[in-house]
Amino acid sequence: MSLRSEQDLSCPICHDIFKDPVVLSCSHSFCKTCLHKWWRGKKVLNCPCCKRRSSKTDPPSNLALRNICETYVMEREQRTSAQSESLCSLHSETLRLYCLDHQQPVCVVCRDARAHNNHRFRPIDEAAQDCREEVQKSLKSFQEKLELYKQVKEDCAQTAKYIKVQAQHTERQIKETFQKLHQFLQAEEKARITDLKEEERQKSQMMKEKIEGLSRNIAAISDTIRATENELRAGDVSVLQNYRAAVRRMHQHPLLADPEVVSGTLIDVVKHLGNLTFNIWNKMKQLVSYTSVILDPNTADPELIVSDDLSSVRSGERLQLPKNPERTKFSCSALSSEGFTSGTHSWDVDVGNNKDWELGLLTEYLDVNGRLQSGLWRIMFSDGKFTAFSTLESEKDLPVRKVKKIRVHLDFGRGKLSFSDFDTNTLIHTFQHKFSDTVFPYMYTESPSPLKILPVKVSVTVEKHN
Image 1 (tube, one colour):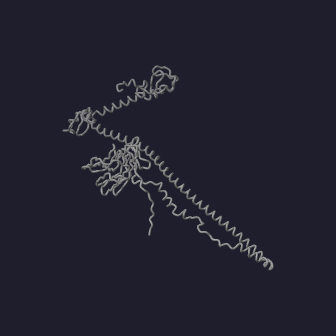
Image 2: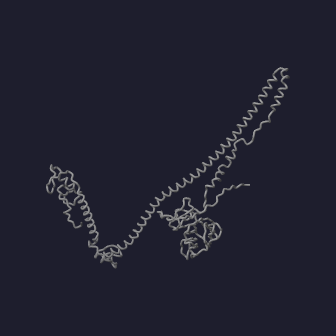
Image 3: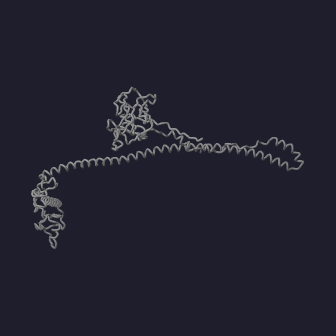
């Protein structure tokens, strides 16, 4: 392109490089502005070159020619700029040397000048190559940094998508949990209202029968009183004649015992409302589950699946999960959500028929011969045998045949981590180590059979003050 003759790229009218060229039907091209000026005032629109009549007053643009011209002009400007840059501004000589002391290109006259006395020089092409290599090294680090940023950006985009998935799944679990609680409360409400209605029915029926009995007694007594009073209002002779009949009639209906109001006829409000919320809460224990160790799914290896209640883990199909720091800190495991820095702690794990599992503790920092590395204390069951291992000790076979449930006990202060058979209370293995950093319970398996942290017994107690 730099060798193309400007005449081939020049407008026949203005003799300058084409600007916004248009093409006529005869294939001749002109600057759009030049052509319209040429045609101005003419009745017949002819080609300025071949005089062929144009059928269009607004010829189409010659895009290919325009692109070629723009490229040529740009390259010409670059050549002109390069030529001006390659000349010494002081002596107008070609810059052929590079002063290492001043770090600038110079000409041969500059080399002999007083300003560059005793300076070191290199041919400009060698110096340029050295600079290119130095810049290339720096550029490589930038390129690596760029790739790192792109990778982190991709990880962040994946994390953003996974956040939505996590939020939706967690929301669904929350709703299901509260739905169970709502169902329990609704059933409890219905049962208690049913008991209240039944008590109301029974006591209302009792009162109805009581009132009916009283009404019958009132009617009988009223009849006796009315008949006797009528006789007493009669004349003396009639009273004397009917005296014996009246006395006999009264003896036949002796006065009944005084009516009594039976206790316990009112609704037993205390039974229905006394400590109602506490009693419901206490009964709700059957729905409540509590585990002393909660697994954090954000730490789980992509091949591990943590249960919805965060109490068990099993091996499954590898998931596409974001590379968050919590997950990559300790690979091939699922950690508890809470680490321990003091005190005593116990948790029980049901290993069931799982034939490949690990249980123990992990810590981020452990001084091993003056070098910090991750700390590990664990027992493992694999290939039909039990082994114990820690970062500071070699692997050791354990004389254990079979176990279904394991109790893990940590005494942080005494530096003691023990594993025992939950069912027989038989010690399996004990690690002794002076723990200093935060330790995290962890679980791992390569089996689809789950490892489950057993819930502890939940009780409700009332503290009474003397």
